[in-house]
Amino acid sequence: MTPDVASLAARDERVRRIVIAAAKGGGGLLGVGTALAGAAIGVLAIQARLARRAIGTRRSAAPYVDGRYPPPGGQPPHGTSLRLVVLGDSGAAGLGADHRDTTPGGVIAAGLAAASGRTVSLTSVAVIGARSADLAAQVDRILPLRPHVAVIMIGANDVTHLVRPQESVRLLVATVRRLRDSGTEVVVGTCPDLGTVRPIATPLRQMARRMSRELAAAQYIGVRDNGGRPVALAELLGHRFDDEPDMFFSADRFHPSVTGYAACADELLPEVLAALGLERDTPALPSS
Image (cartoon, rainbow, N blue to C red; front, side, top):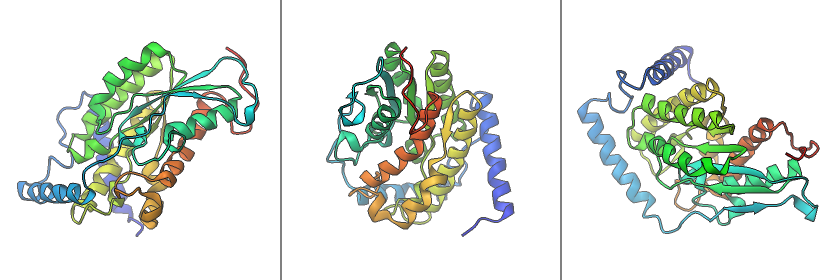
């Protein structure tokens, strides 16, 4: 259903307030979740527990992705390697993928190697369950590597843990600024649409959709205005996860499948390439 003008205007106003509050330090404005009446919060808490039970206990880890990704076809690489880092949560780590080459980081690294003609050195510090508050420690780990470009995927766990959206945005913006100040290009996949997750029942699913999309919109503005390159994953891919959940979700029905991760990486890769002055079929970067 296409939202009406009034509902879009209301959402835009809430997003604007989130961004303003984040810029002022995250205080004052209550997040959507924390502003709910006590009875509603009780309903949502019960449904969240039921959703976690339906999803089940995690029985696998994300593939280990760190390593070197050479240009395809055995062609000799041009110049020194490019350093790519991945930060964020289980989506960034690739939980649900079956091999490092099918994780978001692996797909992006391979695409970057193909476009640049250079070997890509990939390091992931993404942690399953991470929230925006965990990004600072992840940045501490990768700054000594002097990465050329960082890809961040974060936000879903902030929503499920009812973190104030302005606080989530403030922490993400601080991360983007640190990386940009160090000379690293930054691409951010904003919060996915949690309303597409089928184990989440109504009314929690509708609330999750609203909260996640509003957070994503505020993330987009905060990242864009602070030197990063945001990618609106919920807007670009939410309908595909909604329409074909068996294809785009993994067996746990919560994390993306190989197909889902490929779709995410396909949206992120062009921004990674653009950040380095590349397109998919451009000549190799000069050595540096």
